[in-house]
Amino acid sequence: MSLNNDKIDELFKKHPKLDVTYTYGTAGFRTKGEVLDSVMFSVGLLAVLRSQKHSGKVIGAMVTASHNPAEDNGVKLVEPMGEMLAQSWESYATELANAGTTEELLKALNNVIAKESIDLSQPAKVVVGRDTRPSGEGLVAALSDGVKALGGTITDYGLMTTPQLHYITRCLNTQGAYGEPTEEGYYKKLAEAFKRIVTGKVKQSTLYIDGANGIGAPTLQKLAKFIPEEILSVKVVNDDTATASKLNLKSGADFVKVGQKKPDGFDLQPGMRCASLDGDADRIVFWYLNKEGTFKLLDGDKIATLAAGFIMGLVKAAKVPNIQVGLVQTAYANGSATAYVKDTLQVPVVFTATGVKHLHHAAEEFDVGVYFEANGHGTVLFSPGAIKAFHSTQGTTDEEKKALETLRALTDLINQTVGDALSDMLMVEAILVSQQRSYADWDSAYSDLPSRLEKVKVSNRLEFVAIKADTELSKPDGLQQKINQQMSKFKNGRSFVRPSGTEDVVRVYAEADTQANADLLAHIVCGIIFDYHGGVGERPRAFQKVDKEGNTTA
Ligand code: 16G
Ligand code: MG
Figure: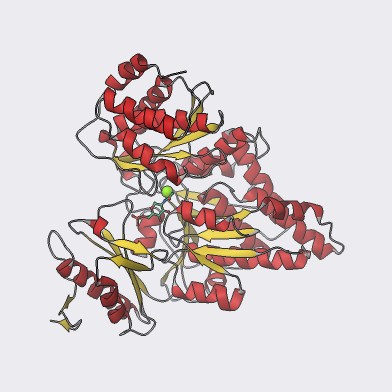
């Protein structure tokens, strides 16, 4: 079989490429919604080839720009078992998206077909979902045209969270073994598993969830209907999805994590238990006011340590042999969190580069792999062997049986495809209920080292090459030595620099013994980058000036 060139030409003409260069980045394509029409068409084409490569298995496409403002949009492809698109295909996505004429497009398509030995006679199935952005509907139509241009079939699931789309993709490809491939199937699976863990235990106070005025808000409201009020009470705040401009505006997980402050819409009082989702509900961070009235954040590191500690305890109590629990972090993990995991929990820690796909694959190496980015994206993966062991181990005492039942329920409760804010919310709640623990008690496991995250605009961020799981730079020459020199001047000083995968900036992270020192270290490193490595635009006043010997100057 060969491509239907006329059909491709006819449909491509409906979605002409603009004079923009596109890149499939850390989490797919992401930019202004108004320039994405042709990109969506090209992603539809690629999804068909990917499905054919997998002998007709269903490929997912999620139209979202996560925590970005409402005018942005994006798309990412999902593999049959619910993981992110294989990295080796990202460059094909970029090539197809940048083809300006039908001729170029056919050339790019034939290149993928030849290199990947695609059998065009295979069937191709694609499922698509989208978040609440106004541009979403039109973009789904463009993607759909791409699928049709190559003769594939597409099912539009409409509005849903990113993790729901990943869930559905996996359900469809496992003939329902992972769950019912419907929105309701998702709610039922989570709600049932949650009930199995908490029923009969003392309920906690109301959870106030910041929905970032995005798709997570109505989704959580629907999920809550499947969980009796006697075991969980949730109140969704920032649930205005009708006013597009409010999406992620002064709200959501990213706003709270970066700014270390509460979102709009909350009259926050000590004792209230709160959390924030992001715009597509694949991230969550928890937060509260402590007794002194100070805002306190329980981020991805805190979620990971809570989960790892709880699961380790269960595995021990259930006497399941040979289960290795491991934790995966990125360079953004707070130094105190890493120390706590190694020294107190005594769990092995692996570091990967930033981006969910890297963490996910590293977590698969463990029987129970807990992975979270500090920003709140993460999940816990159970290997097939671990799931089997939890079911085949019988347990003799009541305590053993109870622990086994909780472990089994956790394998259903925790989304196995990708980080899922709603599943993570229920996981955390199930743990806190089981341990009868308050946020403050959870928080007291360790104290974060003060940290600062900054960004610097530079003329070419691709001149910055991060190595060793983003902890060091190999390029530009000499910069890493300068950073090392500055770090050594601060107690507990640690700083690293990496080019962003989602924004045209380089990011600078620093931590140290005090907030003032963390800020200073970050601003020194920012100053060095800005002054010696291509800073552009107005020089932020906070950036420190440093001479060639590395001494700060006024
Ligand atoms: C994307 C990634 C996230 C990562 C972030 C880093 C996925 C689904 N999301 O949002 O994991 O933390 O990018 O952004 O992979 P940056 O490269 O701009 O710092
Ligand atoms: Mg997100």
